[in-house]
Image (tube, rainbow, N blue to C red; front, side):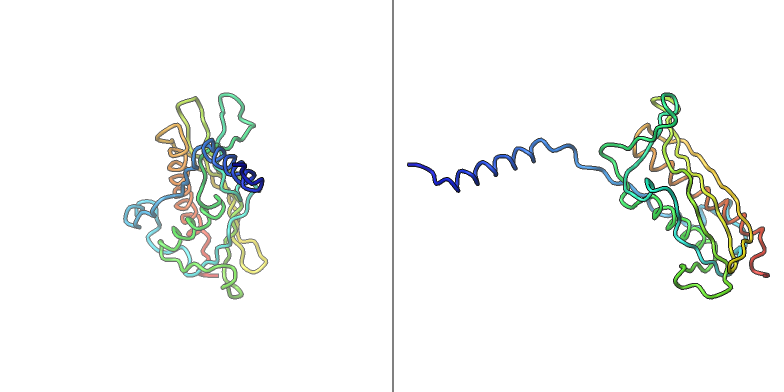
Length: 207
């Protein structure tokens, strides 16, 4: 019995689809910064009193490659100028959003009332973050670290109060994306502590 032509076409298309599914690459693994440690675990790095009662924190800005879910690394021992994405590992949220949320959480943990730009009232100090680097750097094939570098600017109205660059690196526990994600989370927390200490020197509460 001859099979109708339209059924043959459907069978052939199904075969191609099934073949495509069978040869698809590994399913991506997604990472984030993990749970936020309680404030008690960070007490040694935090100021005794909030550096400012209320602070507006704008979402972080940065290069376009940090506004995607790709995880990047550099082989410093081979070509430090080239940033490479992992093939099957992703952030579950773009790094700029991850870093913004982590900094806001850490600042809020110190006792500061954190507001977004849309909730701000006139005259409140505003913290702007510009991220320069957020990547895993391999010194050798088996040793790497997470590196975060950013520029923080504090404004009141249109007046710049102060600006400072922060940079932190931390060793990765493993030479892979998982180790890189853990190292970048630790470096981000360290920068948050540095940021709080700096804010405490600006006397924003008395202006």
